[in-house]
Image 1 (cartoon, one colour):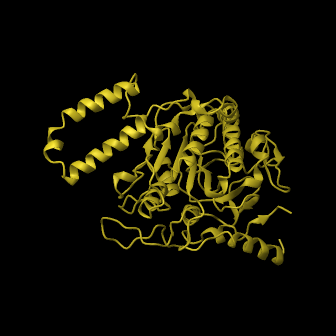
Image 2: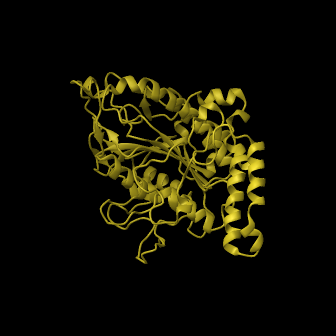
Image 3: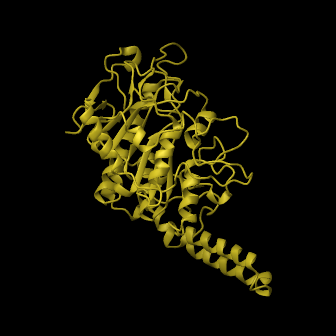
Length: 429
């Protein structure tokens, strides 16, 4: 890329960045978490010339952005490439699930003795404390399970721990784990609430006690989540049949639809925990189903957000804790498996101020090593924070009284939105 084109590309990106004092570009964030680590070669960084031991014969296909190709397993997402950017140079070098997840969620190296909060918890707190979210639903929601690899709220208040919906969104109505028992109807809930109020002699004796008022307020919020207007966000059966079919009648597709509904309800941070990507054995057998579901669900989500005018204010980011080994293990008992691989992998970002139609960074001919513009977790997370209105260089309040920032300062932590795109190829004409 010549210097003039590079300068124009950087200026176009920089024009989309708001100052720390301005209102955030992104009101909500949807994190699509590929629990276990997706293969970069089989998704957004195909290597059609690497040989069958690396690509199993999978080909690259063109997208709707001239010059950008992705794997043939994602034909629907190939039609949406103008809406997202591909980061092909993610790296951190940690191959263990728990520690890699911690790194990708906090931007921090493990082993400091401090459990830092995840990006979801930090953004949820910032939205609440800045008065940008006053909704009845929790500010941080996981569809349908929490990651379970670490404490997502870290040293922050449990108020910022994500609420896991539980259940199967494909059923149309979520079953919120730990809140609603099976078989409970709104009528039974109302009767029990009335009975509980009649037994509340302490509350009647101390009507002005603030702690009791706070307790009652929490109860009211819980009832609203169970059976109030806020609960409608989880009722996918309110959607037209055609819309549900468009996302795919499976757990992942319907979770994507639920995420869109939660964005419409103003929820600041939503995680879709997509499981089953830790494919050590028979990788390609599993991918036949999972990649098709992922392709349909995410492409429908991006198109739906765009059509409803929500994509400009909603960040969508796709990643796992790492990628998969480029070389396929054909031996027993793996039979075509891929292992953990954190030296070079792929993430995708869209919406909320991230421009679409770009490729950031470059891997080598087998996706084994980063060739240009390495992007570390703190780079990516810092950029997301910046667009969501949380200055990555601002102080991070903590109960220990330590001098901490939202994202760490180090050679691997520097570089936010402008720097991530600095060497990106602007493919669009």
